[in-house]
Each structure stands twice: as C-alpha cells, then as structure tokens.
Image 1: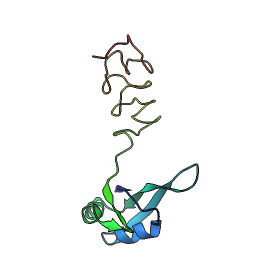
Image 2: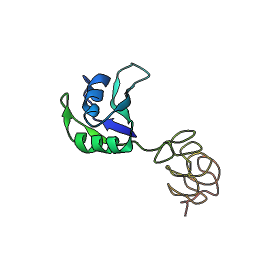
Image 3: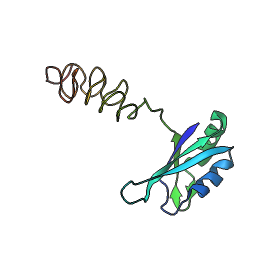
Image 4: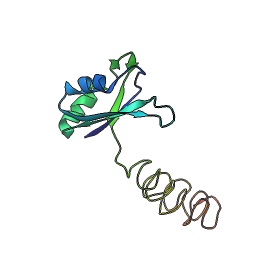
Length: 137
C-alpha cells in the first residue's frame, strides 16, 4: 500500500518516518520529495508498506500524531489515474484532461466530464477551449 504523509517538519529524515511506520508493519520504502530547484524537502513523503492491512493500521495510528514538531497528515495515496495524476499530467491522458481529473478526454484542459465539460468552456473535444466555446453544458 502506498501512503501519503503530509505536513512534515523540515528536520525529519526518511529514517525517522520509517521508524514511525515500522511500528505498524514492514516498510518497503520511504521517499521524502525534494524540490528539483534547491534539493530541499517539499514537506511531504510517500511510504510503501508490504500489505494493505499494515498500511491501514499505520494510517490509523499516525494520522494527527506529532513527529519532530509537526502534526502528520497521513492517508492512502491516490492511484495515478485518480484525482490529478495519470498519463500526461494532471488528470489522465493529456494536459489537465484525462478520464477522471479536472477535465476529461484526450486533450488539453478538459472534455467530456469535469470542469465546465461539454463542448466548450475549458473543455471541448480538442485542447484548451476546444469545441464551440461557451459555458460547457
């Protein structure tokens, strides 16, 4: 199970996180995200646990707990195609589109379902604006 850990202290290390999560089960990996510009922590991490059962136990026991001076926000990480992830950027198969994210279909900022969907607005069947314009009904 992949777990998102937010609101991390600047002083926390991957070992600190691993030790906290190991109380609930075996930890496969811990990754604190780093800024590509300055290499500093971006205040969140991903933890991969061996089983869903151990992961859920860790979420229940650590969400809202303090670690190194910060109150953790712990929850299951979204799959790549949910929310804003997926292939080609936020939302699925292209731009801010995709099947589930902020838009839809295979184009730019939207399409069939999501932000103002329909054949216009930020949607349409093409890229940013696409279709016939308008409010996207």
